[in-house]
Length: 215
Image (cartoon, rainbow, N blue to C red; front, side, top):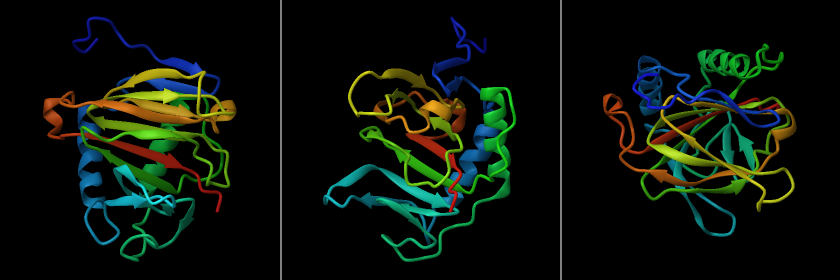
């Protein structure tokens, strides 16, 4: 139970959307955090995303493999310093495939994972309801959480409004959504500052989202 009063069992939140609490142990979290700190450094480092409407996203983002910008992908940071995007390491593909296997009880498909979006949330950051629809592949999205806990909101495929389900994601949790939930709207309406595991040495929340581009 790892100190939990009540265990958090794996759960299918919606068809194709699976939450695996505590999938990454502390050592694995520390290794991933150290990698995120390297990736966040310039060039092609952590940036604030400007939306076409003129607003700014409250999270800060760094990309690997392909650079995401609203609403597409490029090989350079077209909306930032113009540098080539950082390479996507093969060990992240292996990690994503392990996550899919754990969530679904079967191996991932033949396509290689080749995109990582690393989003940093400070205490005030949020993520509005959106779909991951800029990829050309319907392979499952693999989401890993480090640091502060958050409310993750999984909605439906038709609208940003209800029905939706709220799930608490904590450091080390795995969330996979594919199949009928691949195009579901989702977001993070709030985080819980100060809830990161003390041994992690992280203030805030990191979300590492792994995708297959199909590009």
